Length: 131
Image 1 (cartoon, rainbow, N blue to C red):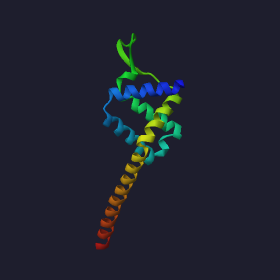
Image 2: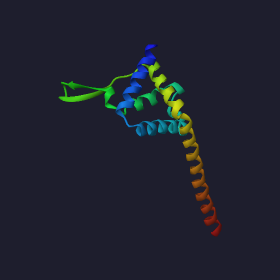
Image 3: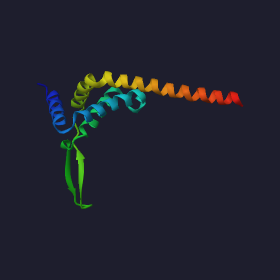
Image 4: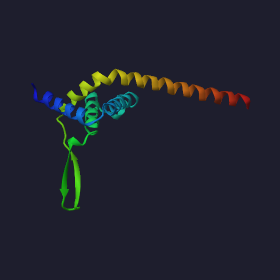
């Protein structure tokens, strides 16, 4: 097995055992909705996929290490970075599972937003007509 796939599988297993499933689903769906509403936040599709992997891995403390900073006398936290190839593999698996649902949620949010704006503009026009 390719080492990047092996690393991705290991990271997904860690995520699955240490984080509640609903938290993983909510985070993945939120990231897909964010990309749908604000695509300019991500330089490319690969950048989105790496950020999706980072946000999901950030849900667990298993990917963070602690070290003592002698200058400040405090413990510091540092996240271990994943190779970009492994991050893209993780995100590919996640987007296959939750991407269509996230896009549907984004579509429903847009429709709801348009309905609210239509109602506000209708009331505004009615009030202007009274003047």
